[in-house]
Image 1 (cartoon, rainbow, N blue to C red):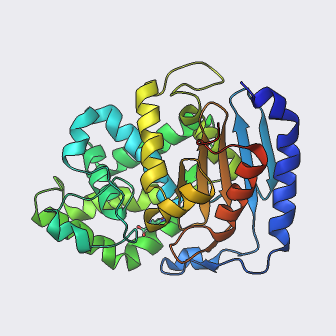
Image 2: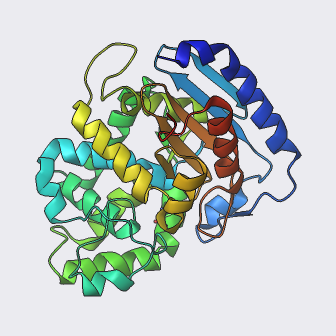
Length: 315
Ligand code: DON
């Protein structure tokens, strides 16, 4: 693995990227449609890398928790695939949407089957799948415990104020859920599926915790520290493929073009990036670009991937 040759450079590369991002004035706009997220300081920047050979390297505000929002959809997809297997794909597609994360337009043409599990509609169906046989509180607890287990960190919590803030203003998500319910693609009451959805989006994690939680995806489905399997190697590859093609919504093509690794963004300004066989990465900068993805987070990952020759398309 060429990673060993590159190893001495990674901490230096992270420090360099963090220093350069600290200087940037144009940092994008913090999401304000969820009022609680609008309160976050746009000058924050953190980055963390957890390598398959066990190093945890960070720079900037890498230990400050932020709202992971849509990044949680990687973990709920993983959990739901574990519960129902490939039957999941009868209710959610696997194609990039080419539309914003909260768009409703395709749902009518496609009979209430969301394009993919990362747009809001798809993630609400995944929440509905995770509700099967559970009260909402139990489903939310299962998701939180799974993430704590992946990150090996029981201090990770749900920010209830963010969840309440989103519920109070989540008119579009209520519309998406009710619309899918009308097609029979929600098996529980819309409010219950949305309760699960709002709470998993409101999980707060630091870059360090997030990069730890993503380790299994960089290591063929196994936790690199213990060797224990979280998912099969095939499933890890497929989740990575979904991240690459759909993880940044209508900005997915641009992220693949510029960064060249599977990634999943959230409107809290975080991005989880996976370098298969090498490392799990997390970056956080709250200001967003026009597609609702972290502006400096994308630029930082582009720089880091170039410095480390990490594109999955690199020979
Ligand atoms: O449903 C929402 O709008 C948010 N809870 C999550 C959206 C999100 O993170 C999109 N990502 N860039």
